[in-house]
Amino acid sequence: MTDRELMDIARRAAENAYAPYSRFKVGAALETETNKVYTGCNVENAALGDTICAERTAACKAVSEGDTKFKRIAIWGEGDDYCMPCGSCRQFLLEFSDDMEVLCAKAGGRYVSYKLSQLIPHPFKF
Ligand code: THU
Image (tube, rainbow, N blue to C red):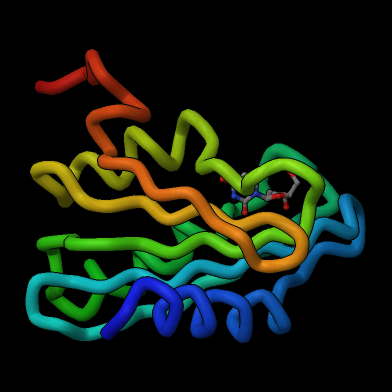
């Protein structure tokens, strides 16, 4: 699957975003080493800190299906800036990846590509 195809899946996943507070819809498409794709969207809550990001929704779907080796993730958001994963999501993804690819889109569909190690260079490990 091409990067663009994975990003298109993330774009469609954003349609299910539950974001009545921020109005900022995010979609994620996570590809695992088994070549499966798990989608996610942000799920907000009236207790704002309980909100779950799109990336972690997708990650938990994969792990709960026993798919724990992550290869690539596409993140779709329609802001002026590229929709980068937040710090918590970077740490969370790292748990299941040696050095996955992270594609981040912005309004209009352009995207940038990073290795996770570029986004979280000195991670906490236990
Ligand atoms: N959000 C994500 O889904 N992923 C991120 O990595 C950053 C932020 C969501 C959370 C919240 O619903 C909205 O974007 C605004 O912060």
